[in-house]
Length: 398
Image 1 (tube, rainbow, N blue to C red):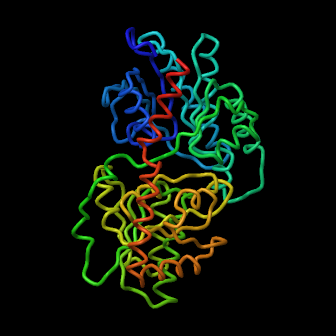
Image 2: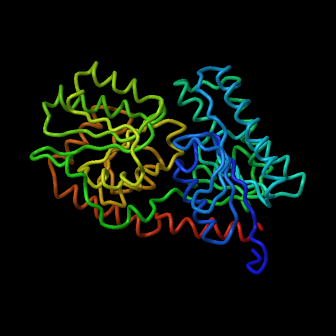
Image 3: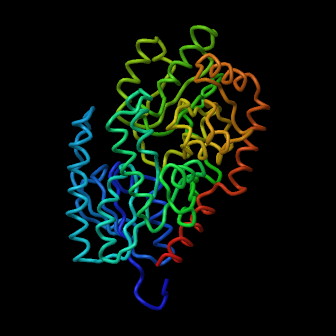
């Protein structure tokens, strides 16, 4: 980048979340602003209903979020509407502010069509692969059998990977998909992992109302969608109470999403509502204090083609605050947590409960695993480590 001239301008397209609610996108934006780039973000509305504002130095434009519908016509409506809005606002930005690169956050991969159009005008295209869209579709559908929608999603994934000037993956598994299934040039593919920011790296005071005498706190923080497996946590709590005779705990589920209401219904049906506290969405600045209150953290995402490729930010936030985790055995869970987690095989709820009891009954084990967790974070898993890779990618590209 030419530090003496005008800053290089980056346009970010975000469809599946609002800005600044998406933590990964927010960290990337803050990193690029600090490095001297000019950043504009287009996203749907979220907590903020403003159509245009400045957030931390970034120019933000939003369009009204649409409702979520299931099935084929739900996908057709959501993506047709969203891509139309992204295109129209990007044209406005093109003429009003200009940009040198289009940074596409996925899913959906078909947003790449907009970036490819701007490539014809000499703009660079950066493809940021948050999730594998074909596998995410199957996970939400609950069926591993590919169908027409799956094949269409694979087509757009290949198109994006083969046309992008630079590709970002959150881990080596996703990078392998980019170079293998999608045929991308390995020299254009970079890993920029998720990582906890500074708010998780300092001492954090717990939420005092959660610390109850004689009761351990089992906790989850994150999105609550069908693919996130938080229902497995509720089933594990039922197992602990009804089949293991344990009620010496309180479970805290922090977050919101489309599956939240069905989760509350499940807890009621299983008779464990009294043991679970649902906080709903909370301000992000309060999240570290909740995690600091947990004795044992849950990453209940079941093993499947989608989750096996995901490095969850919640896992690393737990680790940064020296918390042991119980999770199902997935490739990326093991690569991230190592000995800082206990693993249940084959998506077995009873085995998951066994691992929880093992930690509930051994405070020394909890403490030792917590120290292992923090050491792994300090050894290269913080956002600070990832930020340097992102800045290097852009300085070389522009």
